[in-house]
Image 1 (cartoon, rainbow, N blue to C red):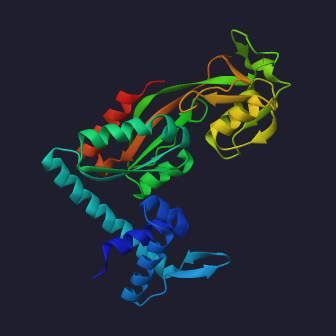
Image 2: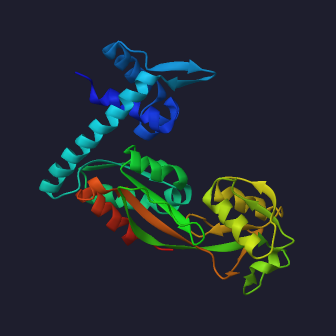
Image 3: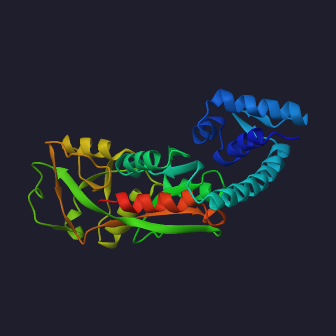
Length: 298
C-alpha cells in the first residue's frame, strides 16, 4: 500500500516546483523530503525524480502519481473536515500561506491567539506572495491563504475557492525628510512625474499597481531601486535615494531620515482569507477567519 506521507511529499514537489520549496511548505528539511520520495521510488519501483541541470524534475510517471496523490489528499481532507465538524472544535493541522507584510504585521498575534485558545489546533505558516499562494490553496498544497489585492487588480479566485474580507490596508508616500514634498498635507499623483521610485520587483502586485496607476496619471515612473521587503524600501528612502509607496501593515517605525505624506486619493489594498470550498465546514477555518478579522487593526 502506498504511504500517504510520501505521496504528500511528491505532491508538494509537483506543486512548488523544487524539493526545497516543498520542504518549506511542509515544514520539513529538503533532505527529509528527498528521503520520502526515494522511499516512494522503491515502493513503486519507479523513477520519480530526474536530474535537470542543477535541479530535479518530476518524470512523467511522477506527474501521474502526483495527480492521484492530489485526489487522495482531497478525500483525506473531506474525512478530516467531517471529523472536526462533529467534534465542533478547531483541531488538527492548518497550513497558512501569508504575504510578507501580513506575516510580519498581522500573523504573529493571530497565531499566538489561536495557539492559546485552541491547543489542539496546529497552525503552520509559510510566507508566500499572493500571486502564488492562491493557486496553492486551489491545488490543496495549503489550507488557507492570506492575500491582498488593489482596486485596479482584483484578486483572482479560482473555482472551488472561497474568500472572506479581513480589512483594508491604507498606503502612504514615503519620502526623504528633506524632500520637497515633506510636510505636505497631501500630494496628488500628478505631482510625482519627476520622482525616482523605489519599489518591489516586477511581477509583484505592489509593483504592478504603482506602474499602472502612475501611467494613468500621466507619469512614466523612473524605477531607481527594487527590493522585495518593505523595510528595505523604507531604508533606501531614508538614505535619500528616492520615494516609495508603502502600505501601513507591517511597515514598522519610519526611520529619522524619512517621513510619510498622504497621497490623494489614498491608495488602498484589501486583505482576504481564502480556503477551499470543501473545507469550509472545518471549525479551524471558521475560527481562523474570525481571529484574523478580530486582530485586524490598520
